[in-house]
Image 1: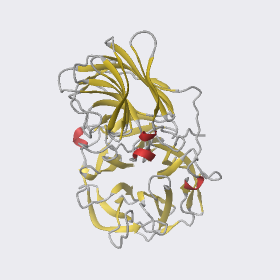
Image 2 (image 1 turned 45 degrees about the vertical axis):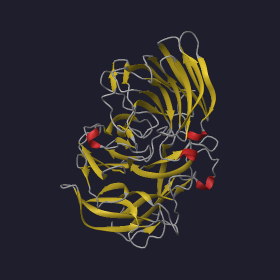
Image 3 (image 1 turned 120 degrees about the horizontal axis):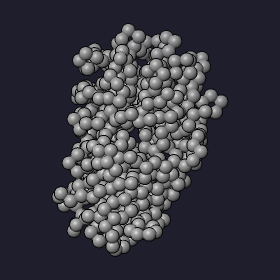
Length: 497
């Protein structure tokens, strides 16, 4: 039995590959930096992050992009001693490839495929003779009738020049009449057939996974009569797992196959954690894949005996691999020391699509708390603290100023101070607690914790209300007049409640 989800929290669009008995998994990151985390596993259940593929600003330009723009749907593949990651930066540069000899990196600078390579969700397939093919999604070039009337197309890629060559061929337009958003395509070869696995119907409630096959990689492809081969849309909006789709297949070399895919776990109809990575068994019947045979849906499996708790260890000049910044590495304003992170005041704020002095982590549980300790060295017109956010317009902040502490609820970009107290000490501990769709913010100067605000409604941070492709993250920030002033944060602790 495998744990499910295998990656909790905002880890969408999973792509996986196997090298001997090692598995590697990557995910989309959109506006966050470093981009595209890479995980390693021996059993497809226990995943350890070993790096971030795009960890240098020269590899990815995200300036001023929205939280749900930036890096879309990466694919990882291994061929002839080299790892390949292909993705789309929808905020600048388009489709590109990076390579590495070791999965933990370093990864190369981008090989951009050019303005003529349109669309998103690129993938690579290496045929038996060594020919590499690009497969992706774009608007239908001929006969398109409506938004989402897409085509999946394929073209040969020259690995020496990293450019597409020859003619492009549209190979699929979806299995349903008036299909929308056939996307996330991957090609595999098994028993003489080329299989096209892809998603359809958008990434929300109607999301689904479908498959087609052909004896010729350029087609024509025939759809599986059982399409969609996997979805949760028929289970209703109150089912504990929804929005299943965007999958990748992998085998273990011994005849066993698995599918990794994204899905959501809403709370009373509202999703805060975003799209997570799940796994399912795959059997082959009559030449077609069958997902979770005999069950037909994803099951949640918790193999932990104790609730999760993680206190971050900090080491000089190395940010923990799962910590995130926004749009750049912000090296001039974020410094890592042994046991603490220093954020220099930066004029950019958390409600702008810029690169603020911010460091955060993904929400991984429906009930959790995030705690940090800091020295309050704020001067006039400077502020810092904890931010729990969906994007720049939907947030909850626990904010300190020179002599006050505030609870701030940000809805549709409008800030509402819901509680404020005076501060008497410079050393202060801050805490955000989330229980389902409600939050509390607390602080401690001396003695016991003080509740500054409780029962803060979080539904406006949900995907259903705020839209977008990301999940909620929680972290620390510092803003104000750009100066040499700074705040030191330490004792970063994330704990499941």
